[in-house]
Length: 192
Image (cartoon, rainbow, N blue to C red; front, top):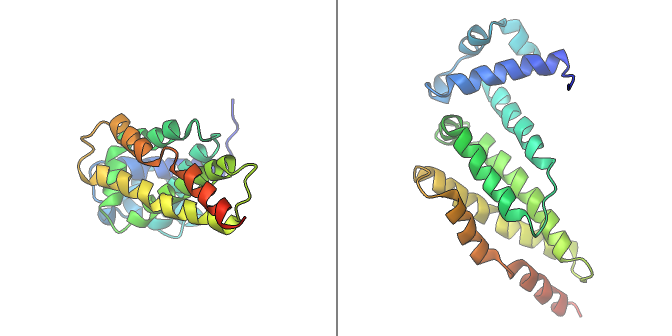
């Protein structure tokens, strides 16, 4: 059994309340009063942990991003990891769509960027093993592909999540497959 500090339990209660409220109410219509009333805490407790509702929203995505960040992602498993992000969004559809369609959208995008950039960095570093490629070039590849992966995901959300995520991930795989290695090889040739 995992021990969770009291502070984390309180934050989690508030997070669950916000997610529950966002199933029925637009994010910009939810107040601190709504959250504390739903979870049975006081305004003081809320302000002890968060400055405002936006900070709580950011904490939710950061905390959940940490869960995904613990997974070991490599060149062989990146498609499964990318699929897990689609599945997270499907599982939390109302919460994520509400965030996407609100002024809290930046928190969702930061969640996606943090995960995608971390995974891509691991993949690029793995493929670049035994290659003479500068960190600047590797970073450029990550910076190039990160927004593309996120754009595909956001477009899927904006289109109502109708397409099977497996198909979307396979299509991205067809576009990316081998291109990271090809780019690294070109960078290596350039500096020889």
